[in-house]
Every structure is written in C-alpha cells, then in structure tokens.
Amino acid sequence: MIIEDESIFSAMEKQYINSVILGEDISFFWSHNQDKDDGKRHLYHTLIHRDTQQIHSSYAVFFKDLTKKFIKKHKLDFRVFLGGYINLTFPMKGKGTPHCAHDFPHQQIIMYLNKSKGGSTAILSDKRKIIKTIEPKQFKMVSFDGNYLHYQNYPVEGRRVVAAITFI
Image (cartoon, rainbow, N blue to C red):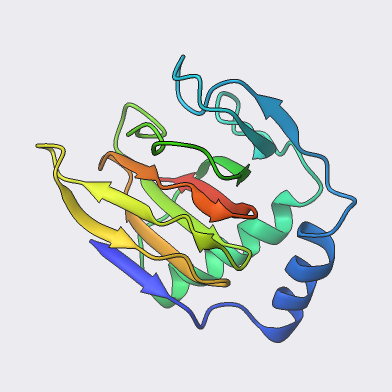
C-alpha cells in the first residue's frame, strides 16, 4: 500500500520546517555512502538512531508527532519507531541505490520538506521494476511497505531535503 497525503502539515508545522529545519542552525553530517559502499555522498541528520531506537536529536519529537498524526489519520498499525533521519542530497549523476531501511518487515514514511526541482522517489517491485514514482512536493508525506526497495532520483538543481521515518 502506498499512501500520499499533502494535507497533514498545519500552517505552524510548515512555518517551523521553513524557518528551523530548512534554516541555518540544524547540523548535517557528511556521509560517503547512502547505502553500504555505494559511493553516493549525502548529508544527514539523525533523529532516531536505527540501531538503538533512541532519540538522537532535539528535532525528533517534532517528526515523531507528525508521523503519529499521519498514522492516526490513515489508521496504520504502529508499535514503535525504528529510525529517523533528515537526508539532504544535491545534484549528482545517476540515481540513488535501491535499498530497504531494515532487513525485516517495517513501514516507511518519507516527508518532502522543501521545494525541489527533480528528486522523485521510485518504489520497486520484488522484480526491481518501478511500480510507483512519487514526485516531490513540499509538505507531501508518503507511506509504503518498507520491504519495497526504493531509491531517489537526485534533484537537477539546488537541494532535496526529506525526513525518512521507519516504524513497526
């Protein structure tokens, strides 16, 4: 199941994302790889650590609350958050590496936080064929079965900023 929702963010939440999350005060860290040793560089901010499920950032509560609001609205099953990151990518050749966040059943949520020229998300079937391409739009939230391989296409200019949250 793939759910797209562009109405979940309140005016105050949009303002907070525009002024704080997309502002100049949040720390991002450099990574040489987006998945394993793929050599695809990006910047990230850990919200919820994927190995310990512990809060790793003061911004985590904001994103957990948004996710819970989405889960409640769409009547999704929820037990625990598994991980959460804000990912920032920029124009590069090629596309992201197809991946799953965890090697066990889980749900994936992606929140598009900024206006991005390009930077869609492709969701793949078990035969690695694209079953859905999700175009980025600021304040769109998408949920899908985390066992689907998925990847991002890079923006053609500027930056692409998304929050990715996993849960069971």
